[in-house]
Image (cartoon, rainbow, N blue to C red; front, side):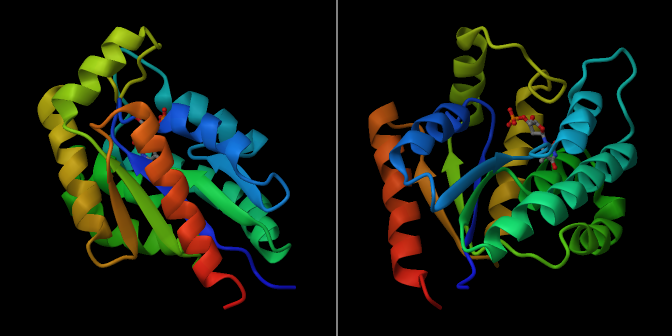
Length: 211
Ligand code: TMP
């Protein structure tokens, strides 16, 4: 059985990632593509999601956040992502390790944990690396404005100030520098962004199938 490809969608707040994902789910053949998300994707990781995204008076320490995101990732990778790839399906995952690096290590001022994070993360994902990351890049000022006007509930990270989100953007870019990725300008009109992402995913899977 030919192994599927592992594709990650990354993007800051208000990049339109969630709406792209629900549109893409209907556009791509269901038998070939499995859609999932982080933190979450399997029941026990969805439970961890509730804990880690909850708005609380006293925030979780950065190191605690790292451990929770990695615990959720380990459950998700081993119980859902790897089995699907081995069954020959492509997996499209909304966020992955690039988010932990950007949100916790860079924006969350967790630089002292960087080395530890890289080690824990490798174990948590059973050594699995994304084949491709598609980054929906948007100016954080525009993204946050979109998020506020959408009236969607804001999680603990949405509520951080603009400088936090600027660091997230830089963190994602620097994490992806040495990894296979493509950047989509998510400041453009929604239908252009959607088509560009679909094109990037299909182009990659069609050109890498059977390798
Ligand atoms: P989202 O699914 O709506 O994008 O929300 C997930 C939130 O969790 C988002 O604010 C980014 C944050 N997050 C981290 O801080 N670290 C991580 O490792 C992951 C996967 C997400």
